[in-house]
Image 1 (spheres, rainbow, N blue to C red):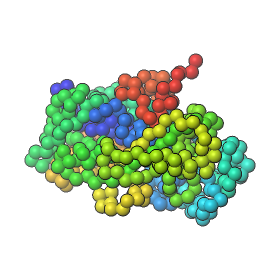
Image 2: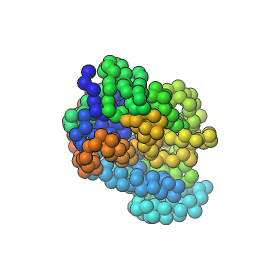
Image 3: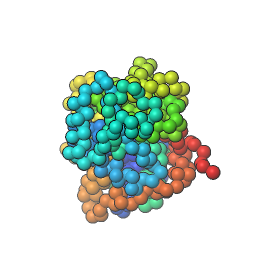
Image 4: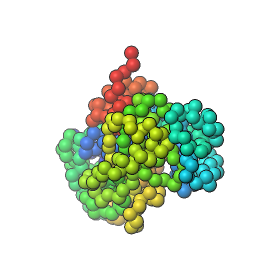
Amino acid sequence: MTDDPTALVIGGGATGTGIARDLAIRGVDVTLVDRGGLGSGTSGRSHGLLHSGARYAEADPEGARECIEENRTLRRVAGACVRDTGGLFVRLTDDDPDYLEEKLAACEAVGIGTERLTEESVRDRVPGLASDVEEAFSVPDGVIYPSRLVAANAADAERHGATVRPHAPVEDVTVRDGGIGSVRVGGAVDATLTPDVAVNATGAWADAIGEMAGVDVGMAPSRGVMVSVEHDGLEPVLNRCRDPDDGDIVVPHDGEVVLGTTSVPVSDPDDYETADWEVERSVEECAAMLPAVADAPTVRTWWGVRPLYAPDETEQDRRGISRGFTLLDHERDGAAGLYSVVGGKLTTYRRMAETTADEVCERLGVDAPCETATQRLAHADDPDRLDELVEAYGGANPTDRDVVDAPADD
């Protein structure tokens, strides 16, 4: 590869592929590179929840509003990359009833649809629910299959003229005369590129790219465990209605449920401890809502690293860090043309991409609107083709390996 792109996107998770797709649709010559297979960082190592925003409604109303808006958008454009399961917030006997009331009021304030459920209707929806569930309400949660989502975005980007290169690690970034100079890319690219704009969309690894360019980013990553166990028949996502804590989400898959998660600070997203207590605590806490998972056979266990942005962070507990996203223009750091997009959630990846593409297009003088909220993703209605693309871009990731690798229905 020798042709220099106008824009280089570094990082092939949901946000990076979303940016490449958005820019390509607007007519920008864009190349995306990732050091591994696509989605192999945070995107494909999440619990795969399509957030309604209810989880953040009282603590971060703006973030909650973004979630519900993007939730609706993904249901329109993402096809087989998402699954509409619905969700429940359940309050157990020892949980604060005032917290439930505050969350309901906050959901109403930001436009998240809820419905109080009788004990009978809750147990009809979730056979085997814990006996000490006192009350519950429904929210429009769902499930994201991130390997498919990333592959669909990458394929759509290529359909509009982008170049996508997995297994192509960035080895160096050079800044000259106050602006982005060149980017050395190894692996499948093995070339030094000189883009007009480079976007650092590497999530929890954003500091490493920033250091190559001599700029500070300010990540505060935290690890969390996910445990997938055998359990059939759960339809809605289960959320514990309490202050966020370990083991308060159960996400349904076909014949499995994903239990999670913990939040432990890490200094290096590539080198961190994985502790047995995290697995044990997640299972124990999730079993407080759905007792059968306590003794269910474990299918697979994985850890993911959240791309939290907190340049002034000093506390060890990072649950309180905003899940909103930030776009950093490194012109302020003497590296014009270099951007870092940090923070955020899988559910809001498209909005993160739109915000970034707007800024890049303004710098490049490209006058074209964003169309990703209305254009359906490539092959969105063909799960078999999506799964072929997942394999071509590097293979399924832990979050949805059971779904992507499942045999096609006859």
